Every structure is written in C-alpha cells, then in structure tokens.
Amino acid sequence: MKRYDTADCAVLKKAELAPGIFDLTVFCPEAARIARPGQFAQFQVPGKTLRRPISICEISREDGTLRFVFQIRGDGTRLLSLLNPGETVNLLAPLGNGFDLGDPSRRALFVGGGIGVPPLLEAAKPFGARAVLAAGFRSRNAVTLREDFESLGCQVRVATDDGSFGYHGLVADLMDDIEFDVVFACGPKPMLRAAAGAAARRGVPCYVSMEERMACGIGACLGCAVRLRGGNGPYYGHVCKDGPVFDARTVVWEE
Amino acid sequence: MADLKLNLAGVPLQNPLIAASGTFGFGKEFAEFYPLSTLGGISCKGLTLEERPGNPPPRIAETPGGMLNSVGLQNPGVERFIREDLPWLRKQGTAVIANIAGNTPRDYCKMAERLSDSDVDMIELNISCPNVKQGGAAFGTSCESAAAVTAAVRRFCKKPLMVKLSPNVADIGEIAAAVENAGADALSMINTLTGMRIDLQTRRPVLRNNTGGLSGPALLPVALRMVWQASSRVKIPIVGLGGITTWRDAVEMLLAGASAVQIGTVLFSDPYAPVKILAGLEAYLEENHLKSAAELTGKVRPW
Image (cartoon, rainbow over all chains, first blue to last red):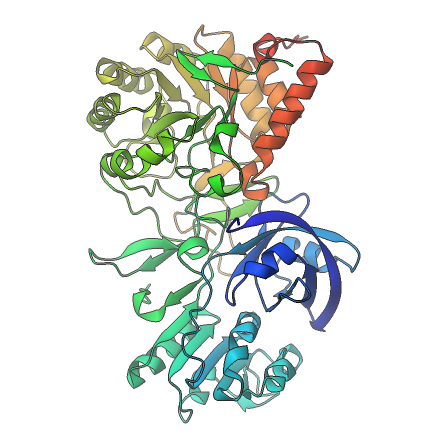
C-alpha cells in the first residue's frame, strides 16, 4: 500500500465551530485506513500554487473519514472554508509522522494552543480519563473542542488571553499541579517550549507538533525547515517528513 | 502513437519531461506515486562540494500565481549523493541529471570531475541560484563570468554539460551565446526570478533570507520569451522551464524553441502533473498528426 497518495474526496460534514474556525469531515477511506494521530493532509486549493497543510483531528476507519478543524488564516484557508457537503476536495494524505503514543496506561498531559488543539483529539482517545488537556485560546468565543475531549473522559482546563473564559493567563500556568508521565503539545512555539520545559523538569518525555511554511508536504522541496539537535551539531530537519511531531529534546528552541 | 523519445545533447530520454532541480529531491518521495521511469529525466536537488545546511526558516512564501523559496541549497554534498542516492536513482529507469552549484569556479570543476567518474547521465551547471550568498547567481548574471565558469568546467566535465541560465539579466540571448561558445552542450532556462514579500504585521520580509526565488505559473510568459530569444542565438538544444503547469504550457515551451521541458512547482500542487502533461502532449501530437515532439520545437510563427 502507498504511504500517501492524492484523492478527490467528498466533503460529508461542515460546521463553523467558532468565528473563522471550520470543521470538515471528509470521506477518504484509503487515507483513513492508514492515518495515525498527529499526521496531516495537504488540501489542494483551486487557483493556488501551494496546497494547505491541515492536521488530522479525528480518524474513523469504520466510516472511512477524516475530520479536520482549521482556522481561516489567509485566502487559501478562506476558500477551503467555502466547501460544502456534496462537494469534493483533493487531498494528499496521510503525511508526516504522527504522535508516538506509547503505553496508554500512562497519565498524559495534552497541551494545546488555539488551532493547535485539534491535532491532539485523536491522540487523546486511548488515554481517556488518564488524560488532561490544558488548552489556551484567545477568548471565550474561540474555545473549541472542549466537549469532544470531555466526552473521552479527559479533564479539560482552559486558559484565555483575555480572561473571558477559564483561567486568565498562560496555559503554562495550568500545568504546575497536574500529575503526568508524558506530554503531547501543539501550538505556538513559546507554548511548546514551556511544555518541553515542564516535561524536562519532571523527567518525562514530551512530543511537540511543529508548524512551518510548507510547499510539497512530502520531503522533496526542503522548504519547511526546523532546527534540530544532531550528533554533529544543529541541522535543519523538515516538518513534513521528519515531523510534524518531534521529541521535544531534539528541537533547538533558541532563535 | 507519436514518438516522445529524444536525444538531448547525447543523452537519450524516453520523453521530453524532466523534473526540475530543487522540486523533486532525489526522486524517492515522488516514487511513492508512480514509477520514475514515467519521466524522461530527473534533475536532482542542487549539489555543492560539501554538505550545506541551507537557510533558516521561513523558506517558503506564496505569491499570486507562484511561490518564493529560499531553501539555500540544503543538500548532502556531492560525495554522499554519489554514495547514498545515486545507486537507487540509477535503477529507476530514467535519465539522471546532476545539478551542481559552487562558490568558486574551482568548486564547480571539482564536482564536474568527480561526477564525470560517476554514472550520472548529464551535468547541469547551476550558475543562477539566487538563494546563496557566495557565487550562485553572481556567475549567471554576466556574460564574462558565465562563459568563464562554463569554459573552466568544460575542461573537467566528460559528461554532456547543460548550463542553467538566470533570468535576472538584461540580455538573455547574449548570455546564451556566450555559454554556448564556452562549450555548453545544452541550456536549461530559466531559473527563478529574485523576489520578495513583506509581512504587514511585523514589517519584516516573509522569508528569513529577505529575498527568494520566484517560481510557478507567474513565470511562464517570462520563460517563454527568454527561451524564444535565446533559441535564435544558439544551435545547442534548450530545455525550457518556468511555470509549466499544463500540457498546453509544455507545448508552448516547445514551440518557443525548447527541445525538452522541466517541470517543478506544479508538482507541489499536483504530484501527478507529469503524467497528465505527458498524456496531453501525446494527444496533441496525435490530433495534429505529428510524429514526434521534436516537430514542435521552435515552430512558433512570430508576427
């Protein structure tokens, strides 16, 4: 079986979860069969030179579907938000390495910021009640997927930048009194760095999902560089092929 | 069935479609989609004498009808390419073109000499990469330096030598003629145009390198014009590239004077583009009762 391929896929469901944040369920049985949590898809946007990389939020092998939750960031994602059920979109999927979930009997801390929360949902499933989600959003009306995590049995703690919902402040402040054996994080770089620091202080592993401007999505163009630690010093790995999930210890956090 | 085979400066190609350097890596990723023997050839990711880490990110920015990149020739170096990538690539049933870039004419010569002892089919001299500080574009932007580096490499190069020209010049015909006189067996043109984008919020250039190389559909008219202008100045074959997205673009490029084409940026939107372009080209030849793609080369009828 191919590791990844393109396919024209039917959009089955579409919803706007929060202003500018869209939820698409796409029928793509081939990709759904082999997809793993933390992987992503490249969406073709007619008229655009580059595809748009979007993380997989949920995988249903039974239904042959993938769920994607994405935010309008520019013209390309705006065009994707106009897709409706019954229409098709060309996907290149599944791409990248997903989360290495390891032993699901461990207590897992999921750390997500804004649109970094969706890729954590599928990864949280096997941990259920042993998972805590610490999620940060700009404000109350940007809070998404809280119920989805709660229905898995996860404890959810929310921080907002403006204090309009949950804790007023940084997600990093929510981590102090949580007991965990492993961390999975996706969000802005300072948040990932804080998650990596919290994990390092407790001596537990931390996996971070990184983002970088991307072209091919498969490792050929070398566009989406990320600085990593190697045996012979730092080098540039690539988000699409070496990631998007990295062991936090391998990432060079300093600019 | 029309015959798509051709001989490019002594290198037999099963069709005139070549993957452009920097967009196709060393072929492994695209081999997931279709056998690489689908392509006439592969121009490998640009090689330097020593391994290069490349430029810091962000390296990519989208533009209307195109994209900018400032990858900065990240590559494993010529020796590791020969040792680790070439043996696999050699077995894929397609022509292998080694694209080389150097800081000094000496670098180019050393690489050409080394690759002449390997089993690559052709060497493509990249004197036009806009994303590296030393050398690179500097060689490609004047007749004297382009001719000098071509002549120097010619003495060490036992393989057919193709020189990839920069569009960032005043008179492309002059450069093409100078490079032909210096001993090139073929030309490939054009490389990316130097460009820039600026983030309104941070007021910083989107690319960490400030500027980058523009590629994609926006380039096609410029590339067609330059191939057309160069083709009247040289006798050696021209491989046309720059913004080819559909079979129609490829046919235009042949009509403008190209003997073969390279495709690059379209692969990022549709990895199957080569398959579609070949099918379209075959159908066009069939419909027009042409026996080969070569019958299209230079057949534009200017006003």
